[in-house]
Length: 238
Image (cartoon, rainbow, N blue to C red; front, side, top):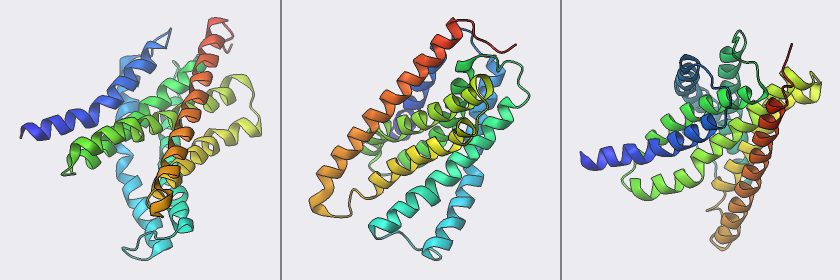
């Protein structure tokens, strides 16, 4: 029983720390009720995502089939994982923001998007970590890569949502709301899923994964700071 609670704590802690980090960046904090709603929606979309991923996987690989080759792993990464997960996250973000009077700053898009992303990541992480016999190593690896990955995808989605809402309602900003986090998520998963494709490529692929994650988080940090600075200037919607 003790190991269960330790595994649960390891599964939840990364999302909590990232949530605290992003909330502390918000100079004008959002209402607690709205934050809780975003977290709950992020957690609840796990249900339709599971069914959607199962359906797409069955279509691509047959009933109960799995990806085996480099190409099929990439298809799995983009079509089975990234497409439904980022799609439902965007739907949840739209539901939270469409009639939200508190969505009045550039940084707010990132705040709400991260809450949704971390709500989803928490439930997903609990499933992977608590249900695995080797929960310690799985928990550590997911704390380093998977949960921060969902955080980064959410930052990108929220950034472009605010860009479209407050800066420029261009087609590029509109399509980037989904396409940029979808692309980042797909590339990340494609690298992870191909780690074991060839025993001689394990270390190079892991190095590529680390490089990609570092660059992605650097990109996210720049976008966070850009939105924070925009709000400091008072450049808010009328």
